[in-house]
Image (cartoon, rainbow, N blue to C red; front, side):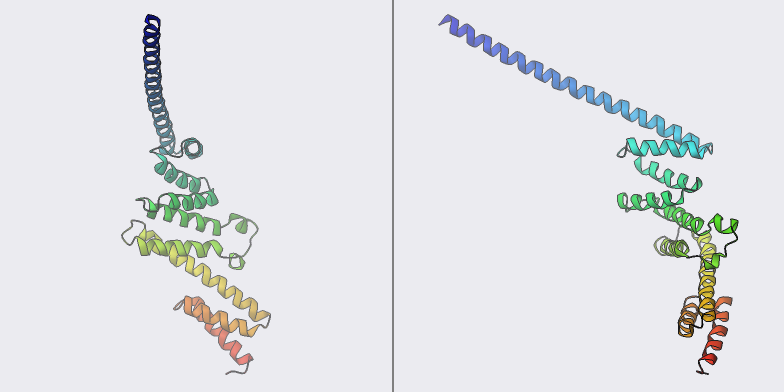
Length: 240
């Protein structure tokens, strides 16, 4: 009987000891995890400040690489939004325009409501304008009016979206000048297409494109030229 009692007491002591060990392990693990989090946060903050310092000093390539690394390794830190904002700007400065546009699209999916949206939309538009102003065209003396205005169209869409959604944005005065330039670029492209159709004697297409140009770009020198070409076309078709 005595042996049984001693055995039971021993079992109870053993169970209590195990519970104490488990609890201590759990507490140690919790403390260790907290230390890891604090260490990681400190590391991220240090690297973030280093990257910001390079940005301030205009070391744009170095800053871009540092922000890229932070964005890749710590995608859910408290600095993530600002890191992506800086990266979009740095991609633009480093002439990585496609990367700037792609990261903007990703940013909007993650942060549909952000205080930086108007700024980033403006940077995206500048990237699209830069892609439209391809230096290779100037190098080989290619007439830009022959080139597909895909990025010019995208830039106009984004700038008009910015004006519509952020009428009080500080970028509005700059946007109006750029919109005027881009619309002239598109009007010249349309005029070039019209001239091509006219030379190929595709007169129905000429009339349709002239009507479209006059509707989309009224009161411009290009719309006046379109009217002159349309009048010539009607005479050829014996409409006048």
